[in-house]
Image (cartoon, rainbow, N blue to C red; front, side):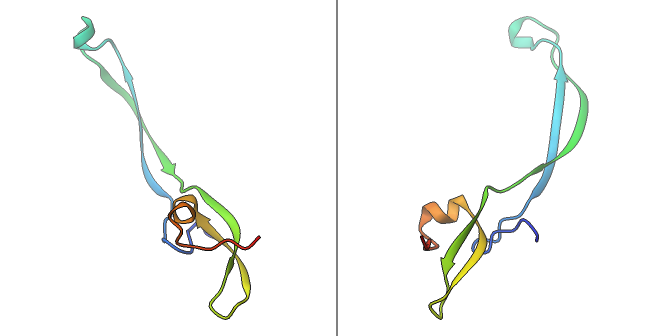
Amino acid sequence: MARICAITGKRPVTGNRINRKGQSKKSGGIGTHVTSITRRKFRPNLQRIRIKTENGGTKRVLVSVKAIKAGLVEKVV
């Protein structure tokens, strides 16, 4: 099962983790320098919850917390 929100379509996106070394010019150094760049993933905050479907039933789906807080989905307890 892919880590994709069923409501908003949020999915993991890739980016970089940049390591820097040195003292900043503002602090009296000669400036910072990039020593390495590593690929990383930004994963959405997904929760597996039960929601109501159109025909009155319930279904378990992965939904982002942002969609739950915005009220885009109705949780079934």
